[in-house]
Amino acid sequence: MLNRKSFVVSAAAVAIALAYGPAGAAGKYGPGASDTEIKIGNTNPYSGPASAYGTIGKSIAAYWKMVNAEGGINGRKINFVSMDDGYSPPKTVEQIRKLVEQEKVLLIFQSLGTPTNSAIHKYMNAKKVPHLFVATGAGKWGQPKKFPWTMGWQPAYPGEAKIYATYLLNNKPNAKVAILYQNDDYGKDYLNGFLEGLGSKAKTMVVAKEPYETADPTIEPQIIKLKASGADTFFNITTPKFAAQAIKKGDVLSVAEVAGTMAAKRTGELIPLCHPLPVDLIEVRAALAPALPGVHVTTRVRCEGRTGVEMEALTAAAVACLTVYDMVKAVDRGMTIEGVQVLDKTGGTHGDWKRT
Image (cartoon, rainbow, N blue to C red; front, side, top):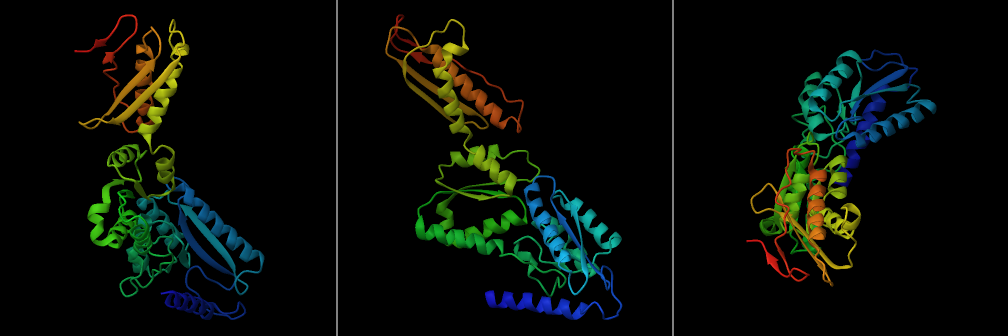
């Protein structure tokens, strides 16, 4: 594969050199080329859910600026026209049509994204405009007979996913895997490659799969479900925004437990007339409610003394619930917090008590 790929790249470079030759040679050119300029088009998500990738477009522009500063290509300067598509396929179609039909670019180079490139795949080939080195690893780009004007570039997602699967089989064969994936060709290529790489063990190793849409404001609901699956290994097939969310806010329930514990310790500061107590045990447990959607929080507080710790337990439960609300409110602001109550109490001045 490496040798063949090297050959293809070399052949493309030679073809371009032969086609455009030295600047001194007179000739007729198609759109986007002249004796002094080569006009190259590009789309990148400088805004939207995948805007982190916009750095790639800026880096490409900086590279062509350097090439131009050093004299260009055979005396021709590169006119690099890069447009923002917001990682939205309809916007990509609009911008690509502008580049091809109005800007008259010679070719489209490194347009980024699987769903966005999929939206222009047929158009580029129908127009016979080179669609080169697309910035996506989807498996569909290597079809020279059907789509001769499109050329892939980076390693294919199914192949990458199989590498991860092989690693797991060799190093953690009993893993319980939870998978978060983008619900498009990018995510599905990775997912299917991973499952194929696991082979017959996929049925026992993969315990949960959750898709998300690029238009989703957050992936907290999916993360909560994946956590509840009992998985010990997380396969994160996401673009930067959602990858960051999975890392930063992935464990909503654990964060809620920490918040509840901290609140119990500060009950005397939060509620008037509640004096600080030497609490020696605080347990906060947050779990998905049996009847989804919902989270069930239970707390247990202990103090060696004659006073009760009901307020500490109630504060811990309330703050844990508030924390869950804060972290997933983008999904449903209509959530309610209810049933905050003492279930039972032992010891203290007034003795034992149990809710019936």
